Image (cartoon, rainbow, N blue to C red; front, side, top):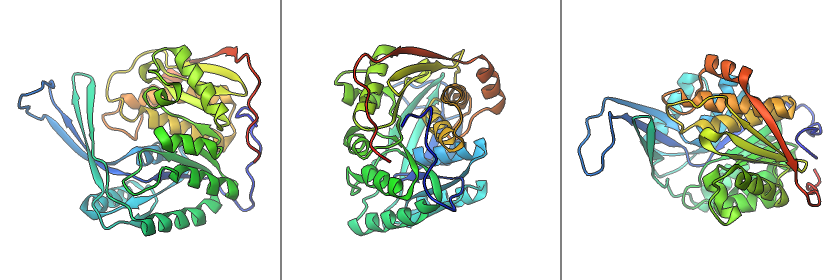
Length: 336
């Protein structure tokens, strides 16, 4: 299988649902300051508390794209109650497995076009709580077409978590996108996701060195495919991203750099890729839209949204470049 010519998803009575998994959601606190200087006190000029974490950001963008989506995740404590109430208020459906511990918080400091992020590790999850989530996922995925698995794991959730969920989703006939790093990504790749999408920093572990150039990113995208994904996408911040499928590499980037908060740009790209799998849109069109929407997400002050007008303007000028095919035997995707 290649992403350019995907088969019909197995299963009858299946709707157009995209599940966004949020194993480690967060209450995101964003501070704005005129400048950030170490070892000094700062006067905050703006503060926003918002439900966040990669899985929630993906779901918000999917909703903005017009997709039917639901968040499945783990939640606990006062921070968790804040997150759940906010999702209800903005119309993002969610189903959470309850934890006894407090959902984490993240702090982002915006200053002079830069973003500094502090991430708490998250609450401890027991074996029984993880088993309960896995059972809830297995039940809900039977009605889904696409699943996005993104973000970190809280303490107690095994390294094989995403691999387990990929296996369950595939058995139910749903496609999966994995946006993770480290052992969690390696295990998930072995389970055969439709697409893997780490960023350059996360992908460095697979390459064994920093991903500094486009050629580095292409190399690691091919590695994602060799390790089990049907397609590999490596995002490179303001330099766009590369994508590999069927032995061919592509490069896409917005026609201009956008200043603002880049925190949710990768999540916006994951959402567009998921929507592309759902709609079976041409691969080049999906990549172009991904470049435009992820850049337009930077223009918004917080993650999980993008500027519609800016995305449309950027899309009209975005080009997707096909690079040379890999000069080695093609990877054979796991049977579906």
